[in-house]
Structures are given as C-alpha cells and as structure tokens.
Image 1 (cartoon, rainbow, N blue to C red):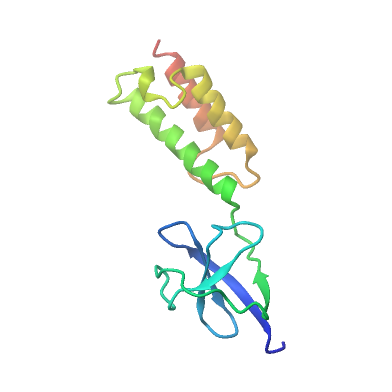
Image 2 (image 1 turned 90 degrees about the vertical axis):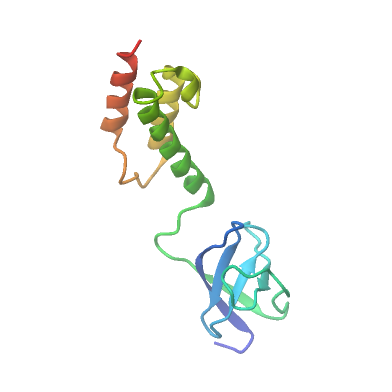
Amino acid sequence: MGNNIRTMELLGEDYWSRPVYKCIETGNLYKDITLGSERPELYSCGNDFEGEPDFPIKSELEIHFKVTEKQTNREDRFNYMLLDRLRMDCEYFLGNGNRNVKHLWANNEKDHIGKMKDLYNSFDEKPEWLTYEQILHYEKLISNSK
C-alpha cells in the first residue's frame, strides 16, 4: 500500500459513544466525531481510548475501513438494549413490581409484549440471552396476572 493510504479497524466506542479506530499501518488511535455516521470524521486522540478528539486526520490520506464480521449496526445495538430493558421490566413486573403496569415500558401488557416480539423478530442475529419461547412465557405469566 502507498504511503497515503490508511486502514482503520474499529476497536469499539468510548464513553461518549464515539467510535474508536486503530490505524493498522501506524498503530495510532483515532475517533469519529460524527458518532458513527456514514461519513466519519477522524481525529487523533493522543492514542488514549478515552482521550478527547484533538486534530483531524490529514485530508490527503486515503482512508479505508476494515469491516469485521461481527459488527452490529447502531440501530440493532440500541434495539438489543431496549429488548433487554423490556425483559427486565417483565421480571420486575412479575416480582417486586407487584404486577403494576406502571412498571412496564408500554404501561400495558399487550403493547409491551408486542414490542418485545417486534424487536425480537427484527433481528437477523437473535440474542443468545432471550428466545421467542421465553417471550411467549412472559406473555402467559403476565396475562395470568390480571
């Protein structure tokens, strides 16, 4: 590769949800200040994963992004977290929440379980920590609590 080409590998996100990349050629760390948009703007960060973005990467460099097999897109990542929150709401509702609908995200049983089903079915890669059968089990337990 030429001297003006840099290949970036995604390492993760910092505390402020900024994607952090490592340059394969130099080993330097860079942050995307656009928070993962389709047109990333990379800034140096003092080679500190949690460091503040400092100077933009040189504009004359050609940037390539290494795509990893297991990268989860931003929307799916949010939806995985939401589904887990809905699962935890079910647990609380059935336990210490005393079956009070105010503890459910949707404030009613039908919409809450419906949202869980919709989220689960939207994923190409299903979560390992929840099955569709478990959602149906929550639905049965919650509907029997009326």
